[in-house]
Amino acid sequence: MSDDFGSIIRQARKDKAYSQRVLAKLIGMDFTYLSKLENNRADYPPKEDVIRSIAKELELDQEELIYLAGRIPKKETALLKEYYKSMPALFRKIRENPEFAAQLAQESEKE
Image 1 (tube, rainbow, N blue to C red):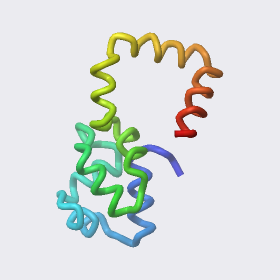
Image 2 (image 1 turned 90 degrees about the horizontal axis):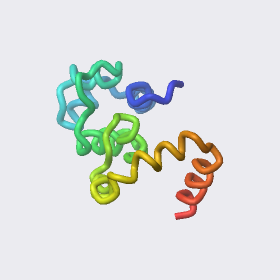
Image 3 (image 1 turned 120 degrees about the vertical axis):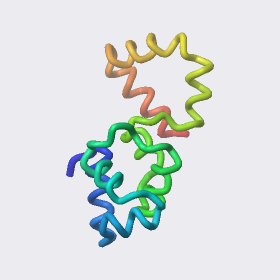
Image 4 (image 1 turned 180 degrees about the vertical axis):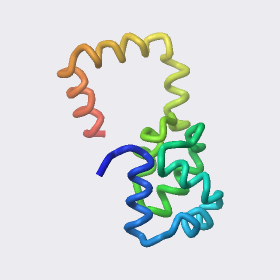
């Protein structure tokens, strides 16, 4: 299974034996938009609250889906605003140094 946003929600929906229409009705969205999301053809990523509704209904990790959809969770937005000037340097260091990236990931899992 692919691990992109659309593939994950499509597979989870099928695992629950929901049609697109049923899932869309449960979360209060149009089924045609859900179809676009599942096929990664939406013109824009869904809003965070929509992603959380999908995740909750399909019993998926909300934070993972938010990132896969290309959204930044609201709680991280405050951090970005505070540290936006140093972020490019951090991303460059992560990209250039896989060991540093692995260490950051390891530390974040401890929390």
